[in-house]
Length: 347
Image 1 (cartoon, one colour):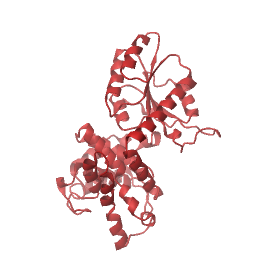
Image 2: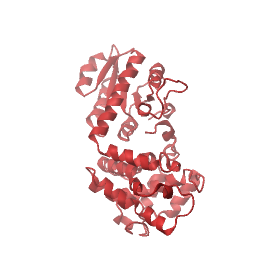
Image 3: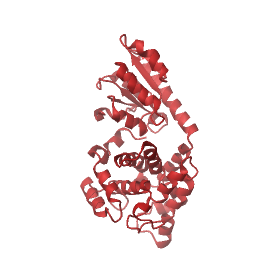
Image 4: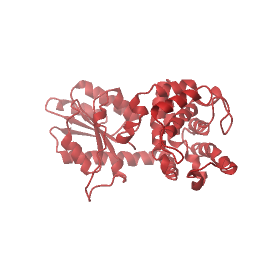
């Protein structure tokens, strides 16, 4: 089980020469997998001085899920026994979770180092480690991971564009990242396969990219939109679908982006689709999008309480929203729904 007590930003505070939390380095995050979640304080402090966030956690499915969801740029794994080697293999052998990895061994487990290297582990270090050396090595692996991911995946460019669009409206800060993460949780909950979950997460990240074609003053307008402005807004799913169609999985992702404002009863836009004619990814994003809008501050109102958001989603189930998707969202853990994880690890 993930130890959320340690999911806290490890960013430099009050240091004039430290790396800014807004810089690329300040966004790097290391997961430390150890049986002692209260340990590694010195090593974490050394990372903090380099502007790298860290979180200690136990082994298990939660770590695999966090890796798949993109929370970590690098893992540090304390090797305890052959079972930990199996955990390392699970992470390194799956393209959805394969991250740079540093394995820490002691006198008992150092015989497992060759096997660790055989799995593709990037570095093996012997305990006790020099905290600064470990922090610097983790930083370099994190940076390399980010650079490779940006070069290999054209989605990185579109994600940057999507984040730029989001900056038009200060009230939606972090919205697309929350959409990506929570949509992934819901997709898993309704039984989608891993590749489908990843496609939904990508669509969640890019769902509003079409707003790049909408003037910023319309996006920021605090009052009601006129007919012309509303027409422009309603075209953003079409523009977004055209943009993401260029991705490798564009034929899967584009329909999700295009349909995320369709309604179960057929009264949404842009195509008036209804029921299961709406791609399931679009149905998922529609529910998560509405939930996030309800529970964050907007120019025209303060954030609703979780209880009120639950009530409104339930009220819209079967008319605006797919009832099964609403149920799946509301069945998620309160920690996810209250978005406490976002304050800890926002990418």
